Image (cartoon, rainbow, N blue to C red; front, side, top):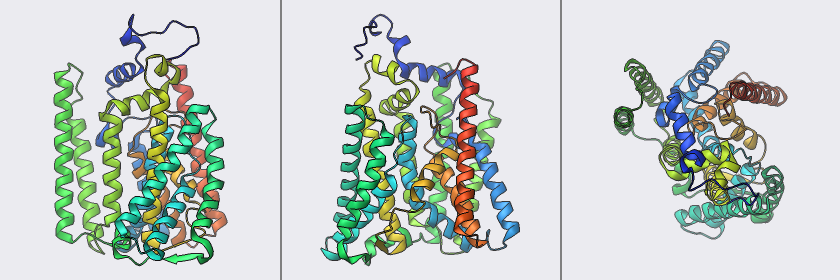
Length: 418
């Protein structure tokens, strides 16, 4: 509870003071969508527009190179975005708080190194090595989150220091080896195993069934709560479009090697974290703290604990991404987690509409953003662009997304919304 001398708002007017309640009422008022439906609605930069941008990118690269839309390349694209997208899932949580974590790339490198050293040099069971790497990531997040929240130091500063520190730790963990080849099939199969064709179709049908069921359940709950319902045609079009996209994706990748296990892991993590953000009290506290931290604190919500847990989750997701990188590349070296890993992990969600100012965005932006930024990178690789051009283009796309976010925020403030 704040000690600024302002009368705490609690027993007198709890509903007015609870930012969570405000958020929910705003959601109800605007008809804001959550969960899978966020793919086609909600947020400051409509996810629908992101999908349109993705389609334009694919058309441009398909015209420039006839190999871009082949089953082989699209399967490679899903493999490339899985690890980065997993890191982005945690980045979304931090951005929803209005904070930033610049250490996620380095943390992914440390986690990959830990799992490689324990598995190869110390001959640990692969699952124990993976759990140990995830635990290291969680511990890093707990340390950084505690410093940010309890000492009030900006997350930019602490995580920038962490970026340097964890890169040093990675070099220490790898020692003189430099490069460690990962050979345990339990680890390598995470990013190099594909679902059989029949299983892929079953998974697609189950996903569509869950989508339809979730949409019907949401409408039933809104009707029971007396909230305004959208015309049936709108959710029907959304569900139909997503279903077609799922079926088409499975059909295309089945023409090559099938649905990658790593993509299933990414989508599973997105589903879990999205459910936490949109369906739980803790998730509403995260959005409330990102929208107005002071009001949230005065409402009695333990903001420090909420923020610390977010940093723990973000670093754990970064560690998971590092393990997927190690699995896909079959090796870990001193450059793991460096280069453009950090840039792409942050750029993806921002491009897909997660606000840098906190409180707005969807976890699904991690998947959409990874596809957008991964498609740009993949297309430029096919066209054999120089690294300098790739960095310039990627940076320009990120800058454009941030400018759009800032303009959207100014428009909301001009309309009296935050």
